Length: 421
Image 1: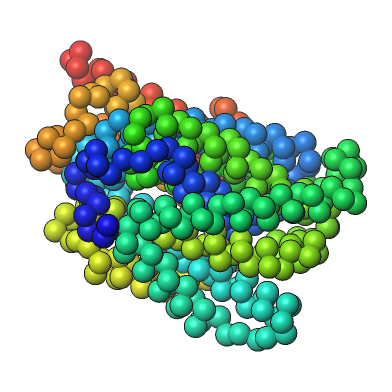
Image 2: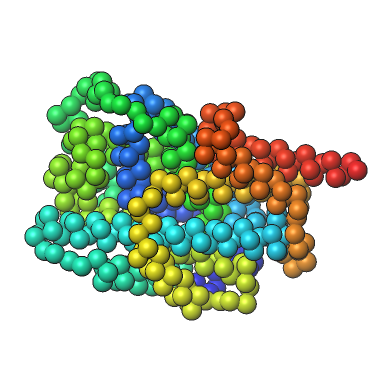
């Protein structure tokens, strides 16, 4: 099936539905990607062990709740996340939000290609003593990932189904290697200075994956029943992503290394490291590009198909040359700030305000701008940004939680007070 037939401007049809485990294999692959291992290792070295585990658990619960709610809305409506944004924010409001999503996803595409080329050149040098320049690898990776995206959801789905078990084995080997020389109690007892708080840790867990949880409808719209979307979120965020973050941290503790490739090489997982780098980056970036194309097509319905995918893929490779990696955790924090409140608005709008509006008919005669949605989102984003900066304190201890609840409540209040007036 070519990408152009994947109904970015309309609900998908019944003949395209698949069983939830197939969709879960894609969401799970995202949790196996290199950025999650990197973030897990950075978090471990920046937090006390108890704070690290607390941040993981709290962050995973938040992601599961947001992902399950957004995913089940996608499964019920059969609409992509960008069409949900259009209904909630109006066509003009959505253009702004969706283009912000597109910029962020292209940024992620660049970050992942950057990670990919750095890892491939490093592994080639360490394992085979071969020196490779980074730029041809970045271009080749970009072409490969873009080509997969052109073939759409089915191609990404097939790739994920084949590669998930391999990455599960590598993660298991990493854990077994860590426990060979150290007992869990010994690893828990390692003392180190904390440079981050639990709240920072939760924000890093949530920030790294939150865009995926909010745009989960892009893949859960293919699930036969909305309960399957909850399974997808549970397995991706509460099980696999939690295990990967923990595995990276535990392996970092056992090896004493601060670089994820050093950690894997320490445990003799050179080929395994290659598997994680290539397989994880390939699926994650194909999905990033797929979602970017959906967001651009939802914003500009006249733009269609393969050319859009190719142009956006080229932008993504360009983003890789900008070396966004240098400020990776800052970038994650920024993403969480902008995107979490979007989910607050959509969830309130769908669950409590106007569920019946979430149809293709609404899109045909959609409002231009929902000022209530825009104000609620802006307020949520502003609060999260101020908490992130340390200008104000967090009520719930986690800035992203404050922001999603504020935007959800504010949207509810603005909507119902307008109805009473």
